[in-house]
Image 1 (cartoon, rainbow, N blue to C red):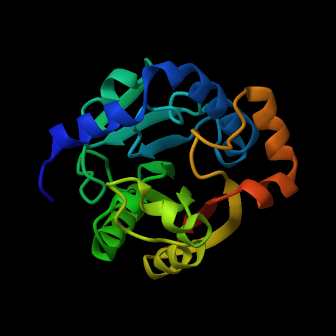
Image 2: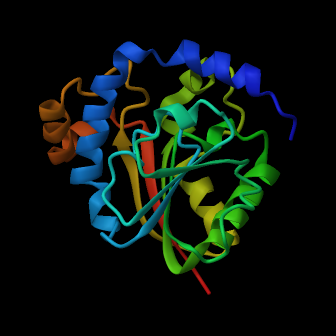
Image 3: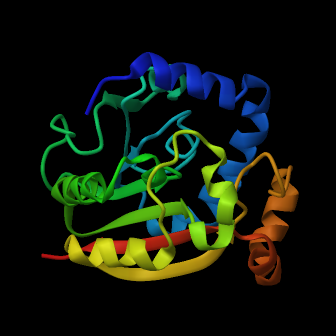
Length: 223
């Protein structure tokens, strides 16, 4: 894969403003506390793949926190105690085999160029996970998003919850949970804009069915 680091840095600097950081951090704190915490034990090693601004890995409570991203800017967003690894999703050589309890991915797989990169990523995730460990994927669903999926120039790979589940099974995972409609597509639109409203949203499934355009898929490493 070609190193286009400068392009990635400029793209994400323009897309995500520092002014939104406090609001996004508050929303991710709610998501970690109210949703993702039930999948993570206090002693777990958690790896956030394509960590971006580290909003998940900075908030989740666990034993060891690892942020993996090809963009070097990720290091400046990581909280103290978070290990930052610059690596591609298909080659995390710095991460030892069977050393991770949970891998988390949010809004990442659509940026991969093709299905070969998807399978390469899932195989690398499988390599670093312990047997029975979890991968948690939060992913825009092209069937629900429609043409707006292509509003971002770096979106390449179209996925639904069904195609993602199929790829996981083919890569040696057992799908444990699928929430087809979970979060809205972006934080710039209909996502609740405060921690209180986010908690209300998460407690009202009808709102998720009305506004949810991202799917949540959780799978366990087999073997």
